[in-house]
Amino acid sequence: MSRRLAPLAGLLVALAVGGWSPSGPATAGDAAATDGVAALYKEHCAACHGEDRFGGIGPALLPVNLERLRKPEALRVITDGRVATQMPAFGDRLNANQVAQLADLIYRKVTPTPVWGEGQIRASHVVNADAAALPAKPGPGLQGADPLNLFIVVETGDHHVSVLDGDKLERLHRFASRYALHGGPKFSPDGRFVYFASRDGWITKFDIYNLVVVAEIRAGLNTRNAAVSGDGKWVMVANYLPHSLVLLDAGDLSLVKIIPTLNAAGDKTSRVSAVYDAAPRKSFVAALKDVPEVWEISYDPQAEPVAEGLVHDFQYKEGHFTPGMFYPRRTMLKDYLDDFFFTQTYHEILGSSRSASKGQVIFLDGRKKIADLDLPGMPHLGSGITWQWQDPTGRERTVMASPNLNEGVVTVIDLGTYENIKEIKTLGPGFFMRSHENSRYAWVDVFFGPNKDKVHVIDKQTLE
Image 1 (cartoon, helix red, strand yellow):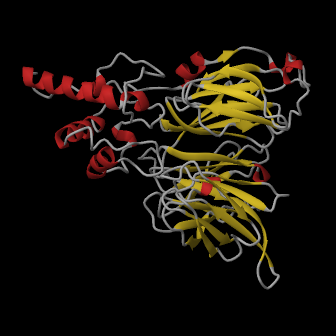
Image 2 (tube, one colour):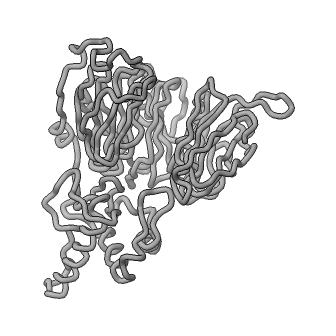
Image 3 (cartoon, one colour):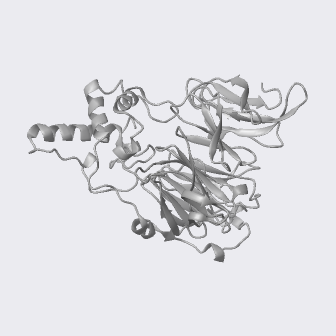
């Protein structure tokens, strides 16, 4: 939510806020109450969550997306804000009755139900240039800069992207982007193309060599993130609204397949927490946010068929098998995953949930949880890093370190035993952690609190 009124970004739908109509005859009191909460929502919420509640910088505020957030917790979030997000506290601006009205509003169904399916996705597709016809070498716009040593800067304040020379730190190009881009653009394997995802569902392909937008398509109404396959052929989009994964051709961003995110029983849909590429496995891995499942979706044409239901004999394929390419293999869990991280081998993922007291280690080949992680607060595993660390006895270990969205701490974990090696105290909660395999040092930010302008430098050997 926002403390100030801002214009609507994203899709405009001819709906009243909330799309709600009373069950009985409307009265002047009903109309006044509806108008009052609509005005509150427009003033305090629409800039981030959209006038239609479909989402923007903030997530969609619809009952189908709020199943894990009980109404008492929603009241607390509106009043006190939410840790590790841009959601501010409104308790100093709204009284208890106004907070309750807003909480009631966001749990009302929108009528008609928002739809963004194959027809809408295909109709949104825009191709500005044929990538195959563009020069396949760095153009004059890069001014001789190393194309593999550039910074791509997402400017969230005014919705632009800048391309910087990594040696001179000078701007080479700047262009207007879609509204509210995700801060983690993805690159093609050769580094020529970069793919952006906006919070309101737009996917943009940009040619770094020629400094042009190649194509765009709107894959959803409220999008979490996107991933590019290790072979550079596919883009997978994770949506909050509608509940789906959307597969695109990386060449021109044309729609290939919509994968509804239904649970194994087929009776419940889910938002997608995140999707990432697992290049050595030739697959995408996605965590579902509202059902405790992890999906692995292979893009290998030779992928083994996926067995469903009871199978008498795998060797002779006695049972129901579905071709494995672009079909999810499910790992059933007991708790949700809101964020996860691959080990160096890509055999396991380390995951965490906003509400859980421990993290999980999931073995992807065996499709099961194999260990718990003792992680304090709210680790941001998606920003974790790994390296080889020599312990005091001289033994070399593979370790992983993660910042924390709730506490001023970086946790270092032994990936052989999944035990904590050290908790490094910091000046506040951190969002990003970065390093390089040839550097002895790691950089960790402080994104929240009185020290939010600080950056820590950690020695990866001494862990100080």
